Length: 304
Image 1 (cartoon, rainbow, N blue to C red):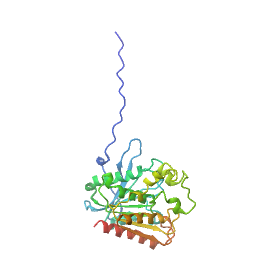
Image 2 (tube, one colour):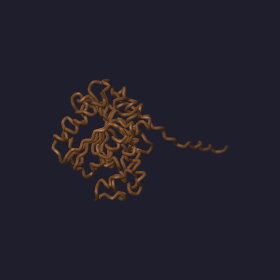
Image 3 (cartoon, one colour):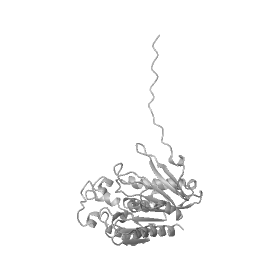
C-alpha cells in the first residue's frame, strides 16, 4: 500500500487590511471642560506601512455638526507630532485645539508619512486621504465637512496649501479656506530667498529629503512640489502669516504665494509679523495670541 501523500501546499495570502472608514472610532476622553477628544483614529492603512492616525477634537454636545479645521503639523517634513502647534503654544491652558473647540469648531490633527518614510507627493496624498476619511465619517463625528478649512505651520503649511490647491483635481470637494503660517511655497526659489548659506544642491536639506533629490539637481521635481506652481483662479481664500525675521523659511516665500494668488485672481490676505522668527519666536506672547486669533477670525468668516 503506497504511503499517504502530503497535502498540497497552499500559498499564504495575507488578509486584506480593513477599510478605515469602517473601523470603530476611539473612545472619547475629556481633556478640557466641554471638549471631547477621539485620539488615534486610523484614517489610512497602506501595505507595509504604519497606520496613519488623526485626533479629532469635538464639542461635548454630540451631533452639533460644527465646521471643521484640519491641522497639519510642521517639522521640516522630517519629524513632528500631529498635536503640536509649536513651542509657543505648549504652555497654553487650555491648549490651542481645545480653544478652537470652545470657539465653535471641530479640529482634526493628522499624521502623515515623513520624508524618511516616503517622498513627495506621498505627504500631500496623506492629507487628501484624511480629508476623504473625514468627509466619509462626518455624520458619525458630528461635523460639517462641507465647511472645512486647512491650517498648517511650516512644512505643514506647505502640505495644507498643496492639498487646498489640488483638492478638485483629486476628486475632493473644495475646502473653504487655508491658513498658512510661515509657508515654504516655492522650493525652487528657496536658495535665492535665503540670500546665501543655502545650497540648493545639498542632498541633506529638508527639501531634498522630501523630494528624494536636491532642488537644484531636479528643479522640475521641486517645482511640482511647490504650491505656487498649482495656483489657479479657483483657489480657496488664503490667510498667510509670516515673521519678518524668519531665517528658517524666508518671508519671501509667503510673499511669493500671495503674489501668485493675487495674479490668478484668488482671495489672499498676507500679514507680515514684524520681528517674528520661525515658530513665532522673538515676539511677545501678545503677538502670538494675535496670530492665533486672526487665524480663528479668518476661519470663522470662511465657514459661516
